[in-house]
Image (cartoon, rainbow, N blue to C red; front, side, top):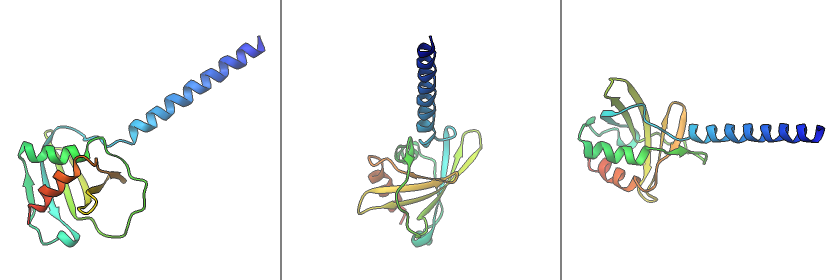
Length: 137
């Protein structure tokens, strides 16, 4: 009887630990806070001379959304370089989210920072994002 209770307790603890780890994994993915209405892009750092631009076309919003949605937490080394762009994402309910963004054309990779977390952009969406942002010249 004691062995059975010990086995049941062990299974319960194991199931509890598995469920906790699954919750952590979903929390480590970036999700937008709502439906995007428009995005205001401001050049920073080496891009500081670019004029602020408002993106409200669905095609351009989708390019940014695809590069950022479900992005994973970035755990690699970061440099001290400043971010290239500040994004002010304005949602349909008028709430706002601010995002600092970096990208690297030579490796077609990108990072962003929001809510005190660094995220690595989706590799498949970064080339289009770079093309869009480089067209702001």
